Length: 560
Image (cartoon, rainbow, N blue to C red; front, side, top):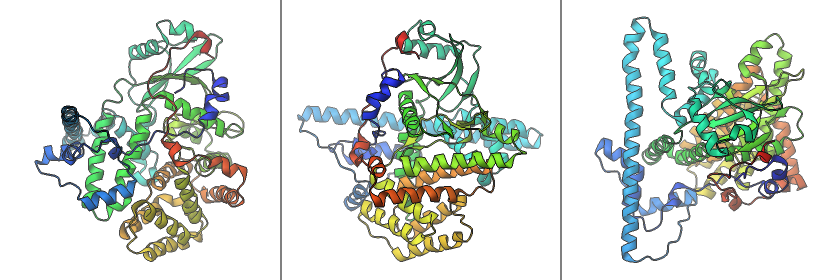
């Protein structure tokens, strides 16, 4: 964990030794001891379904369990033999915990249903009385009060007018940085908990109830604070009780994913449970701003020589508070409006953004997972720079998964659908130990897709459409999709929305192809850069050298 140390000493010691440490990842099923019998696990995953439908959910057979364990490479932890009384007590505690979680899940489901039902009920009365704007405002409010997970999904959706329409995106884009702010009383409370009652004087930061709120998202809000020397800083504060509904929301997603995985023969090959676990891990990491600070340091290190990309400099962090450099700039929409008569400038800035994301994916293997317009600014320099904010969601892949991404996306970019298809199949067989239903059929689908796109080099320019084709082919031929590929595809789709806003004719493939070719050349030649990027082993990604909760209070000398 960041120990509230100054930036330079941290980079020179702790950060270098942990540069390639990633987010702590552990499959949900591996958190249950072997002694926990199947009925208790069923209660946790399917408690809501049983309560609402009053039906019994079947459990996995022995053969099915073996397939699932092979699929996710779950290694059950060993447990020591306990006295009978302690074993019974442990089981009772797990049972009570599962019951409590099932009740919470049920109440959360009913709460979300009540919001959607209310909106549906009010639609006709308000629409037919000429109050449709009121109903639309209620929809936005309904999403805001539904919790961080729901807001996050709408943030991503509102960045894609090509998929959901201009009307939808204009309505919900305020969720990207204009959600309801919390009170300054809560801000003072967290600042006092983090830095002591005299935090303003000890840090030398003036932050009051009249301070400008730069933005408010699903996890927290950012103030513009002023230092004694007149410089400005950005102070990020977590919203109150932000984590209370996340666990229940994620459990709902797990139930839905499990049902789809179990009862839909084609959908289960898309690996929805794996995607939910990945989304869960990334979203919950945002609840500790020390994780965001750690990610920020790594992004700054990766782009320290860039003349086109800026990540704010970290001042200090705490679990609930993060202080960083204030960087002024225009939002995506402001920038497009201000320079609408200079398409050449918009094209140049668009290319900078595409290059940055492609470098994250292919070169750095450390990807900003939340690049919606609310987290992007453009500096007001003569040659505008891309400013990336909110590094709370970041993804680093294992060596094997990263190589798969390079092989698959590289194959698509270069129009070689057959090699991309064979790489996906090999990965699926390796993880599931189940041969595909029709390898040649899947390869043919991807090869045909690339042949159609080859004429105008449109794969990366319409990745949303092609991801649908790939996933449909995987379901049809029983190929288990790697959740890493799917998550990168989703990140790229959000990036695509930003690129289209700047330059509707953006040729993403040209930039991506250069970077992919460079990475592949490094791999073939075994250069030092390639070795450095891949020096981490898979098990290192499960290590977390940073403690996840709390930090020591900051002394006045810690402030920058």
